[in-house]
Length: 164
Image (cartoon, rainbow, N blue to C red; front, top):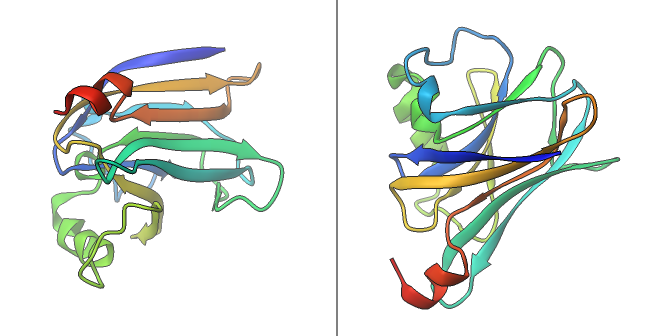
């Protein structure tokens, strides 16, 4: 059954899917701008972005459960996927190292999400349409409550026509 979150916050111009493995490496003070959804260890997901060719911006960040060959496999011990700007989840003391990995080659390619492991936590990250702001997320789960698919909309059809 699909449901929609109201306004996930973006402060660093990024949005991500983060595997929640209950490690101490996650921040504890910013959960009001994150959404958690149940997942199962070993499940395969495909993470992708839709690009607005005219604007050259990320229009949507998507994750879909697939049978095999996913580009984002849920690790053992992970019970939830966190959907949030990573700056709200990754502690300040690890933020510079995360950004070094993100921008390591001097560019941040929008055409594909980046997959980063930070302190044992797996993250799929993308830039967000117009940067800082609040973006809606639609989530669909199976009958057991586990994630089937989710997408964060940074730019809808009206945004494409009207601009920021």
